[in-house]
Amino acid sequence: MRLISISDTHNKHKDLELPEGDLLIHCGDFTEGGTKSETLDFLEWFSKQSHTHKILIGGNHDFFLEKHQHDLQDHIPKNIHYLKDKGITIEGVKIWGSPYTPGDGHWAFNLERGRAIRKRWNLIPQNIDILITHTPPYGILDESQTYKNIGCEELLKHVVDIKPTLHLFGHVHDDFGKKNIGPTLFVNSAVMDSRNRLINGVSINEI
Image (cartoon, rainbow, N blue to C red; front, side):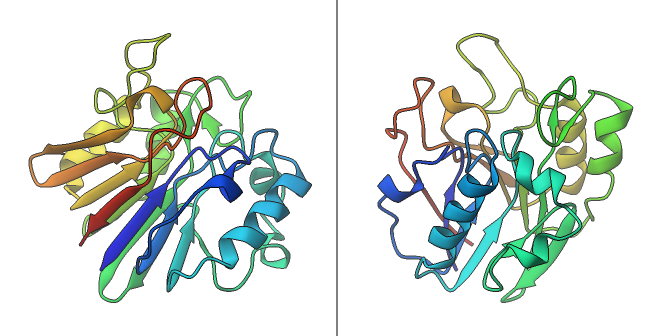
């Protein structure tokens, strides 16, 4: 199965040139201000992409998803799989998605480091093939120009334990790329650089 992963498009989704694939995954921050109009514009575009399966998680900019958690079925097209602490199996591949990032609560899906965010990662089952989060795990493709490492320590512990085949994320625009560590391929899918230019590219993986 050919996977196309993108993240941190921040309203510039229509400027992307997406390669063909079986599964299109967005790892969060598809809006900038998290408004309803931004969200609906993206969802309409995302639903029209030609990929057989489409998966979406939220990011720290995507306030509309957080504020309307109980009626999102009225807004998200039926051909988009929205994952929030939830899993899905597609063609035998087990996938789990979660939107949370460590922080002080001023952003969407933002939880304090330590116990608060650990509760979310503890929901991830052991037998996952693909893990999708917005934040990177600590120390893996998580270096920004402002801070050395901003990934999540608790997520790193859990990923080391569950050993997914593929871990997709974004959030840190400065550290786009891939890294193999043990049995897991880690992919920072942020398409923008730190100056919000669409120059990082689109990630393609096979599973």
